View 1 (spheres, helix red, strand yellow):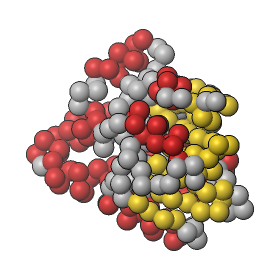
View 2 (cartoon, helix red, strand yellow):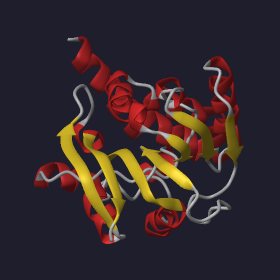
View 3 (cartoon, rainbow, N blue to C red):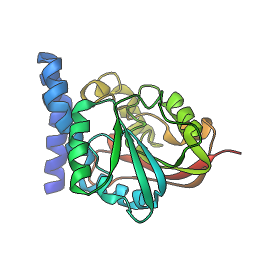
Length: 232
């Protein structure tokens, strides 16, 4: 019963309340509502469980694109990671992430910049991490090319992303809502084919998994996760 009530409230918020607030005041919504919304959704139970699956695999010098509010920070293994570089263009989310880094005793260098044009040295990163970021980055192809550039020869790209569902009914909803959903969700597109996006930009999958996350709307919850390396 709680599950259905949560989904009902979520749909009312996503399709009525949040669009209405943004329509009344875009600046108020983007400064005061959106960061809290992203922080809340990025730390939901199902998404947090996905983070636990992949983040402990990060090692060496780590670059996290779209670090957002720092939801992954508590999952890094301090015994494997030597340093963390966090990339995100949002100053509001960066403030939340800095507090989480301090709470978890992690030394994180934050860069407020676009992932599609990194100021990071080529061939310098052991692990690149992306969780629920490729959906909202305006130039995902350019970002993946940048990830290729900064990874060392034996470097690994680990990811957990939501995107296009193989179910025609679900993908239909994803496509028809794409004209407004990114505007209320920080640029998030639910209809990007993450598997194709990664493979088409020069990566070879070492591990790839797919499923609908339990307890989430299907148009938001089709998840891809795994790891990849630069194709030889």
